[in-house]
Amino acid sequence: MNPSYPPFLDLAPIAQSRGSVALPGSKSISNRILLLAALAAGQTRIDGLLDSDDTRVMLAALAQLGVAVTALGNDAYLVTGAGGAFPAKQASLFLGNAGTAFRPLTAALALMGGQYQLSGVARMHERPIGDLVDGLRSIGCDIRYLGQAGYPPLAVHPAGLNVKAPIRVRGDVSSQFLSALLMALPLLGQSVVVEVVGELISKPYVALTLNLLARFGIKVQQENWQRFVIPACVYQSPGQIKVEGDASSASYFLAAGVLGRGPVRVTGVGRNSIQGDVAFADMLARMGGQITYGDDWIEASGTGALTAIEADCNAIPDAAMTLAVLALFARGTTTLRNIGSWRVKETDRIAAMACELTKLGAQVSSGADYISITPPATCRQGIAIDTYDDHRMAMCFSLVTLGGVAVRINEPGCVAKTFPTYWQAFTNIRA
Image (tube, rainbow, N blue to C red):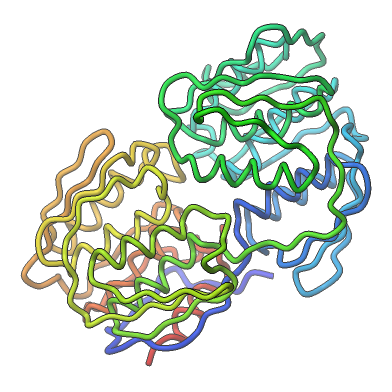
């Protein structure tokens, strides 16, 4: 259950950070596992599932599609898989702004032989999906745009499928298109080849998909991140699976440990994580943080002094947003490159980040796929930060308080998308 949120939060400066945070489950892992468990034969117990807006829309969609999901308590669920065919052959699904639900469900439903409609909030209808639709249409799927071509909402109709040539999909807009295909195509029951057109961005998220597919019996052959061979086999439940803590959410607390001297420890994710965003900790070390790892935890501390970096953030697009705010307190100009995917997220994150950093006094330049931040001598106090209905904007800018800056966060409830209890967790690390 989400806590209630005020229209804004006034946050006072924090002198030092210290403590431990048990991370909520990973959004990316949670929604992938829910779909794979729903498609598999047999029952799957999922432990540590994230409780957030994005997972709730996936759970609601699966219920509409006839999949039995039982809440066991303590973030554990039992999913009775549909064995590759959802019972409901007609449904109208509202998926909010959850790309991790919308893209994979589009691909899976296109192969189900039913009639479905998929829609979301206004921003979801501005997020491109044309590359995924083109890939699915190439094998005969009948997917129609209900609004602007290339964007949701969508209608899916029964169609005769014919897979001969490799399925081709662009990889330079969103890795979710490829992940959606990889999760859906085993439903065909035949060997299928997917080829990526252009550079594949956010490879760690595709690696995450491949890891989870293997847990459900689908071992995809990956060739240089450009060609993927899906074997002719069917999903099988692993019986029980645990969701790692969210590595993207860990970035805020690890950054707090470095900026606020710490130590701050996050639990639920560690050196053996299957999530690419754990590489954020390496970026923190480059900026001057001290990082230590355990099997199920990461700890960060620092001197409070940060050094600017220039970084290719292709592999950690979500966590890279946290680096942009840390740049306010780093000596020199920080440049984050290869972040073009920011523009098609919950908001245009490059534009939003540039606007809010400028409010605080930073000099910011940006382009199609980069942002450069030169900090002010002193940040402006008491600035109201707009969050654009983007959970990561709210969580990122809370960190300025550890640099001695009072700030107002507008619409703080947007954190419910992935971390409903963020504000309490953030308060708990105030030393």
